[in-house]
Image (cartoon, rainbow, N blue to C red; front, side):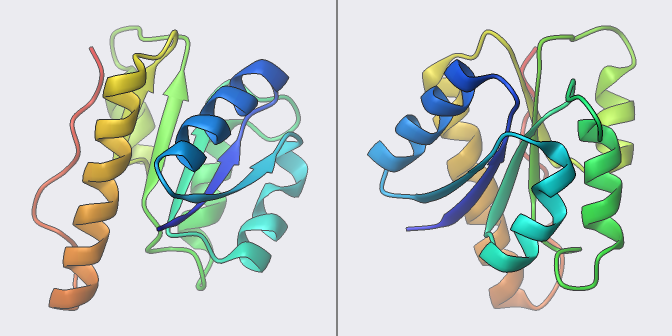
Length: 140
């Protein structure tokens, strides 16, 4: 079981993500206001952060940069979820710190597979004492 922080401003989406993750045996911490996400992450100590990109107040890209700059959270893998999948998004999202992203509307299977892969890579990183060689796939 992994601890997963979910940052999403849409109530239906956050319920879907948390229900899906809980059904797969994970402990979730939902955050609906991105201004609270960094403090919530510090308090929760997640194994994975899932964040929407289009958030009010603090965007998902800004949040990823804040997580990467935080000494306690800099190595926690991030999965971005976005409704926008335009050309160049992959580079921009990965440059901000995401290891993977999934496009909305999500495929439940693809979402679960990406979460599992990121958690496996993070576990391998800890065992080897460094970053994983591979990266998780993106949704196209």
